[in-house]
Length: 177
Image (cartoon, rainbow, N blue to C red; front, side, top):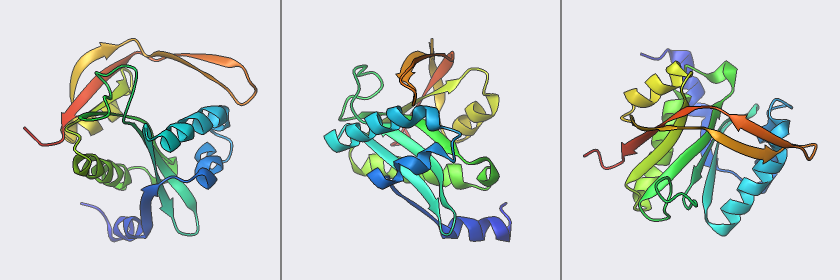
């Protein structure tokens, strides 16, 4: 059960789609500045209709949560533009975790996808992130595959960064069957 303080916090948070002007706020005061070019590229996907970027904004504080959904991907088993979507980049600022905001954001996004006609939500969770896996399992996701978790991006200094984060691919039937 959430405290009165937590309830008040959640009432003050607005979950909305991200705008171009939100991109600097996604860097969280430099913590994620290395993703600056990646965020810009993801936003180009928004303009094409391939991606939806969500933010949680707290009045007088700013962006405290972010969540991206790929609607169309080269791997159709993740996102096919019609029935399957892929969630990634889901973060809540440390000071606002464990207060229900992650669940509220996930509920909001799942409802939006259902209204768009999507049936399946996919995501990857790092194999060593047991807490996140438990969060998703408690929300109806289940492991369907192992993923190598290898990808790369160009950082804010123009250098290619290789990421190797073995993951579990998880899936949820948004219709609850």
